[in-house]
Length: 217
Ligand SMILES: CC(C)(COP(=O)(O)OP(=O)(O)OC[C@H]1O[C@@H](n2cnc3c(N)ncnc32)[C@H](O)[C@@H]1OP(=O)(O)O)[C@@H](O)C(=O)NCCC(=O)NCCS
Picture 1: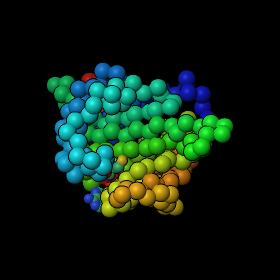
Picture 2: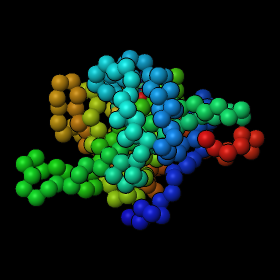
Picture 3: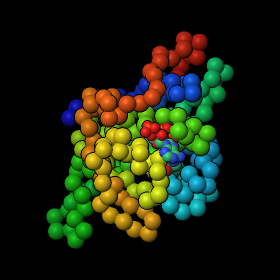
Picture 4: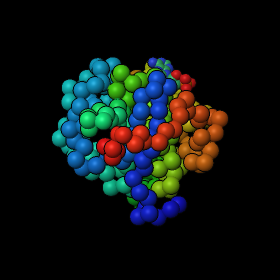
């Protein structure tokens, strides 16, 4: 595991299947407005699939948490597009929160320090173009380098796309608990060097940032 202090912002430029150019980077404290805009790009189904309840807005506490990751316990990646005139559009978000280590004698046992709870969302207009896979790949690699070896993910039982997504990362991902239409998946993280291999082939190509675009957002 590399020391966290040496881990810099994950940043890559990618081109999705449909030609959309995307930058993936860690979320910053001044990203609140982008998160609000991204949430507005989610239809009712996507919101329900992500939060398991009808949801009209992110709360201030959720915004604060997402924009102030500590890089170790909680880690948040955003996917953005941007144009030459400086317009930035939010396209997706992936985050994990490390499950606290078990306290001695705690009745529920907590979890080991190498497990994190992960979640991911892509705006409706970009779903099905490979961005979910890209974000999960980046999140999994960042988590692995920080000592995390397993993700837990709570998902709707009938959420076909997230099941496909998770099993492309870990074909052996399995259900460890059920509750009222949701289930918790246990996902083993591959070593990052294996992520680009066959089981996790991403249908997208990497690109250099176009020089005319100016600095990344
Ligand atoms: C789940 C989600 C993040 C996937 O992101 P995405 O960008 O659409 O995913 P990708 O394009 O990378 O596709 C991932 C896989 O799912 C498949 N898939 C995508 N949309 C699908 C759909 N509607 N039904 C079935 N499979 C689907 C893709 O074909 C792909 O599998 P493949 O590589 O075998 O072809 C996105 O659909 C989403 O944001 N959903 C709402 C929020 C949510 O459900 N979050 C998960 C719970 S935390």
